[in-house]
Length: 320
Ligand code: ADP
Image: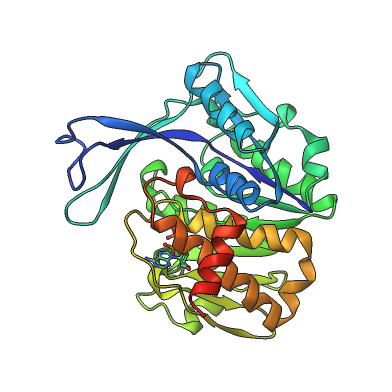
């Protein structure tokens, strides 16, 4: 199957042992490996696809633990660098009683921010069928240059470029800069996935309607996806657009649902990119990705909740 290469951050989320508390009230924290691009890479291998992760970790116990997790899941780890000085990034994350997520990042700087262009494994990037990335790696140098170079190398080698902005406002110097930088690479992507909140943020409109989504299409964009949690997903191409309903599940923790969704879709597209052009086949792939996202919400954490191919098939069969 076609290789998905995922570029960006991998870090450790520390999540409270009690639910519905603020970070200050949390009695203790559990380690949860995360970082959207790493989650996507693991989502792909869980489904039986091939993936690689490109990024930088601290040359510390946490960094080697994270690299070990990727390898354990069968993700190609030859694109991982270790920084001798900076630590692996940490984030303390809590879902407060009011439903809002609260983040506190330890990145001053963290190893992922220090990835340099000359450290990129170009051979690995050139072997990608799909090259996937977010926007957190755009925030500071030298990682920003490494990110831009990796995109260029992947594109020149014929990969499809897949972009999930994965907005984390707390990491940006300002709201304006976040919007500007996220949009600065918009027209390079072949596929883009945004959540409903990101759609509102990027368009500046309060509505999540087709017109605002379509305002984000650009001439080279082959597919725009807007994920809507328990409402499923909307898709937009130059030739058609529509909606694919979600599966009904009992959600306990939605962390990683979007990454699981993306991993599933990229797994399918890396095998056969022509499916984007045919609505019936695209809808089938989105349905599969919706099932993947849905299952991920039924278990705690992101990586431990990513489903196997057979789990996805049984949810799809069961709800027919
Ligand atoms: P993100 O994590 O990027 O915000 P979403 O929460 O929209 O992404 O989830 C991605 C996909 O996962 C959705 O399009 C949907 O198919 C599935 N999903 C997410 N939450 C639920 C839920 N509560 N019930 C069923 N499916 C869900």
